[in-house]
Length: 470
Ligand SMILES: Cc1ncc(COP(=O)(O)O)c(C=O)c1O
Image 1 (spheres, rainbow, N blue to C red):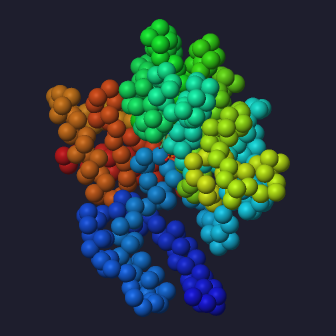
Image 2 (image 1 turned 180 degrees about the vertical axis):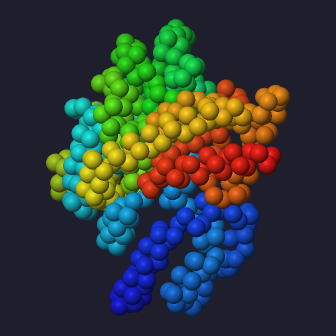
Image 3 (image 1 turned 90 degrees about the horizontal axis):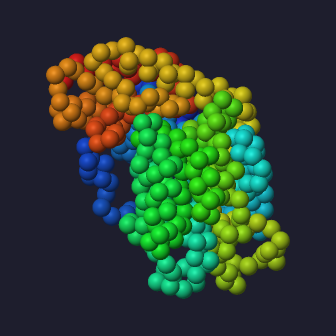
């Protein structure tokens, strides 16, 4: 494609994207296609001759778009948000167009230096306190994996890295029973085995019970099992549970265990001073992760991972072949040593764009609006005798279930599963389900950048309307 053509098509594409965003509310939130429909429209083999770009874009609209779930739709209440604000999209266009591969300082000094600086901004904005060194990972799952690996190495004095786990005592990792599945995945990838994961019971607010954590650690120590890592969660995926960091931190310190904090979703709310009670005790943590790609308007992927001791991280992950050294090695930050993949995109750019375009004030206003709307929705649910809250609002997440009289829990599980399916087939809103203490509940997660009161009102009206048809 020559550059004149590129320019023409790029203008067309930006016009298309602008119109898409302008009219997004006319689309069903969740893709309404049956499995296999999109694949059936794609040829089984690649084209032999070049095709015109406009034909590709036409097919994109005709074939691909019906199979897209619209995460930027203001009535998207499923999972957690994955927001892509316009400034972030602009930065993504630049990142893709410049296409620098930023594995070393030398392979784009601006990318490395901006990443260090902007994560410093973020640490200030979130009130994380002094002594953190930031890196952008592709996902919180990667950050948690890295944390488990560093915890493993610290617990074995880097013997696992050197001789393998066979040479080490058995290890254990601790997280609440409500922790995200990425913790189990990390434990398995780290070679510890699923059985090394201790799921700590939670209290009535779905937060880890510290005394249960302490008891599990003591039992392991007595049995000759070495604690490698504790993962505390701020904002669990199912219910938004917030583990008591201060107490967990003291336990980690007493037993000298690596402490990682997974605030993948809830961490964004730390922009608001009134939610910073969540990080009381963060001084005990060795690492912390939050995803600006969830609730802070930065396109996926952008996971902000902060560590106290980068040298431990580097020692755990670095491999130094001759072809990756540069004349600056040892004098600059080479982020290739801070994560699993070697290659890295220029992800700090979109964070810089978003933080500048909205400012702390703009982000505060959005986060407060979402939290206030969630509290308001909780009031509407409580006022309706046919429904019940299954967990209190935590920031901008609550769970509820439909509970018409005279049905037992098994029947209610089936009813609520059917309700979620019917709602999502309807397309006006998108919700997802979870299980709370074994029972089906519906999550209502408010966080899309453009979500206003009217969207939440529609959301609640749709839930009630469809429930009555069951
Ligand atoms: C608490 C928590 N941790 C980790 C993750 C995983 O995030 P990522 O997709 O960035 O790996 C999620 C995803 O929703 C989450 O809710």
